[in-house]
Image 1 (cartoon, rainbow, N blue to C red):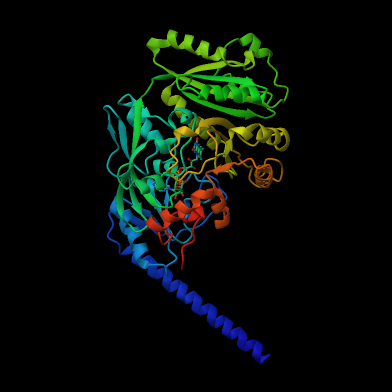
Image 2: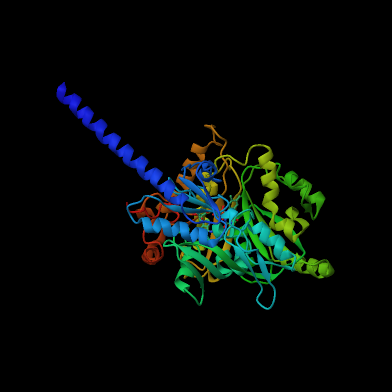
Length: 517
Ligand code: FAD
């Protein structure tokens, strides 16, 4: 009994030592951060917001949140963490608008940099022959749209939702229906200012520090924090014709999509989505879309079939309306949608680009925005899209879906293979996005567990059938899985990590590299 007691006392002693060491380290870290000469400030109490994101599933509390007022605040903080060396467990995550899905912008017991409070020098539009806008990495795309439209200009490539930051989308890719013409957002950047994992502030572009420039684009925040970006602009239209047509045949749907992205002067935007078991669908559109032939449209019955909706836009200014109408008529005559399902609408360019915000406002008012979002985004090679659709839409998701499912092709030639993004090995590939929302604490088909199981089934099928998909906004938890994701590009990804963030301080929430302690 005495032996047991002494073992117990020994264990208590060890635990006490560990706790004291941890607390000393903890308070030492806090006070060392407090002494940094910053223009902005650290917050040590109001940190809970930084442990949340749109996915609403992962919560890692940081130690502190930095509200930077200048690039040097960010550089000083990172350099301080770098100087602490590999003995310290402190890491740093930039948080854009926190619209990640699985804690990618979080830092467990680390420092989260609130990029939105860093707006840096004012956004500046540079009109001229090659127009661009110079913005802070924490700027929201919606603000860039409003500012550049004052000059009759706008960025060329977008995401479907604009309340995201420049740094957040450039760390992934930034994909929407314009990507087939202009490439993703990462193909439309002239220059970046980046703070590396050592705290160095570097400008980079195609011509200057090109390896860092390409590494950071699509680099999942691993090589540096984007503090400024120069984004390419084009003359903006005032209005768009917004068109939706339906298909019941997936092959006809994808044939038309691929036809439309094979040339640039057809439509300005090409997307598509899947409609599973939604009988009242056309009624839902009535408020914003007019059927071309109301009598025929009213007779259309979807009968619970799975349908595929092609979504298109054409830019125009009111003085050219007749010409545009003719052009659209000609272009539509090349397509083989169900003829009674042509729906059209005319909206301002801003209204079109900011379209998802309207849904956000509605969902927020019903308490349905801040629910778990177990999204799954896949890039599927063109040659396998039919296999994929047959199993996923024909077998796995037959009865219902828990949110929009986007399906649209893009051209790989518009992507730069020197950037960090990983793509399927074909000239044309599809973005297939399962944008599910879960009903909290439901155990039914709208519950989180059910949706996660479906996601797993989709991924398992892709692996077994060797579809060759790549995840977009990827999420893995082991380095082995990340290695498989990057494939032959893993080597260069690792080289860049050891060049720009050798202690693995940055973006720990991606779970690619673990800081050595
Ligand atoms: P955060 O979630 O804050 O950060 C994302 C990652 O980038 C983190 O690892 C973070 O550490 C890092 N990071 C953030 N800022 C910086 C910076 N300045 N420098 C370096 N690293 C940084 N994506 C598309 O491509 N197309 C879409 O159409 C699209 N639609 C969406 C619609 C909705 C409603 C939502 C919620 C997301 C959508 N996304 C889309 C995904 C979106 O692009 C990513 O979730 C993006 O990361 C969100 O940007 P954020 O500013 O919230 O970044």
